[in-house]
Picture 1 (cartoon, rainbow, N blue to C red):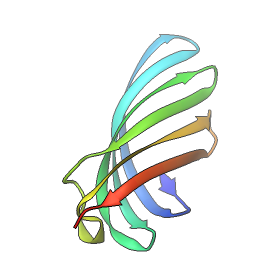
Picture 2 (picture 1 turned 45 degrees about the vertical axis):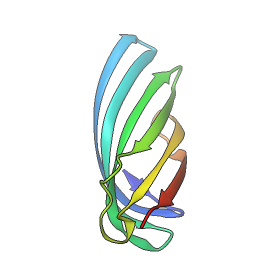
Picture 3 (picture 1 turned 180 degrees about the vertical axis):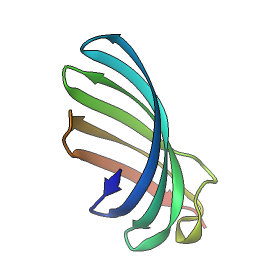
Length: 99
């Protein structure tokens, strides 16, 4: 997954999905992000939980405490996104860098 905006970089993402019918699935997964957050270079891991329903994916994120490296060491926070099938996603990440 590629990110642009305040969060610029790439994440390697793994999902486990459970389809309950043709239109609805629930998923959880992890993202290992590598790049920059507001110009600060580093990496961190996000835990993700969400659903895909009626062509829209929504997800809640939680940054794994202690997973930050480089200038992102000490990062904590959470976020979410919403995306249509095959479309780009709009995301929000609320974070704090604890030094």
